[in-house]
Length: 324
View 1 (cartoon, rainbow, N blue to C red):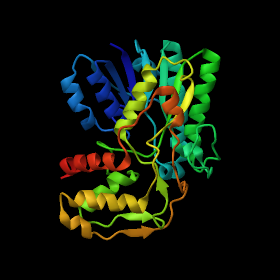
View 2: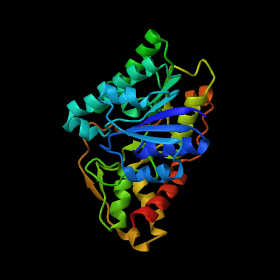
View 3: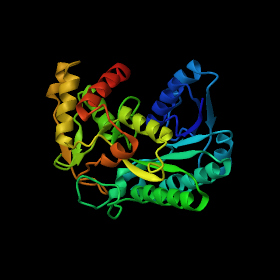
View 4: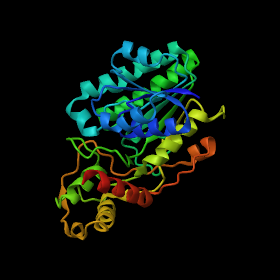
């Protein structure tokens, strides 16, 4: 049994990771301040795993909270962050405090506790204005938002800690992750749950721009697989590396909406008639995103099971059963 700390464990990705680790037989500590996460994501785990799951309410911006959570921990999955490009543009100070200062606090706590490996959520936003497709880990551009800057700084800090303190890290650049428990509410809701919620209410989703911007939408189970591989790999060449975490498939926003209407119409035929609207492009958005997953396949034996359409069907089914 491994003892693993999941920061941001009440969030969308974090709660899915907590569940997968507990099902695997690990002991899990969750650190979350519920700024964006929800206790509802954890209540089934608290009930089902009273001996192996521990929730600590705390903030990664407080070093003492990080130190308290990491006692006896062997591995860290650092998911805690303040996401959203628009949010970082509106409030760069708070994004920096959480994503950089909070990240540094966790690195210091992990170093002092002697954890075996520090796995963290990086971001595809790091590719910035690079127009090269597919995105390859060693070829990035200039960041286009405060959020992108914070996530790139995290990669730099992790590398320095590995070189200076002989820590092991693996950074996972997430590409537009979606799936069960992703919050459809709030000003900064991700596009898939937001559009699903609107379509289920017969409200018109608004696509930013002409809808031809494209993304490598990545189902959450692929992300869980990558985190598990990052925790367990014994390949010395695989550690202290950054990996794209994606499927390697590009979908435009127009295609996404078409798929959503098709899959939701299986539950309610009226959804097929909902009109789609278009608005201005969003500041800080990358036009196109497509990951090369060659490095992850080669060094981590990554083999994603869910392409975008298969994952979207699963997500739509979850939302239909949980948002009604």
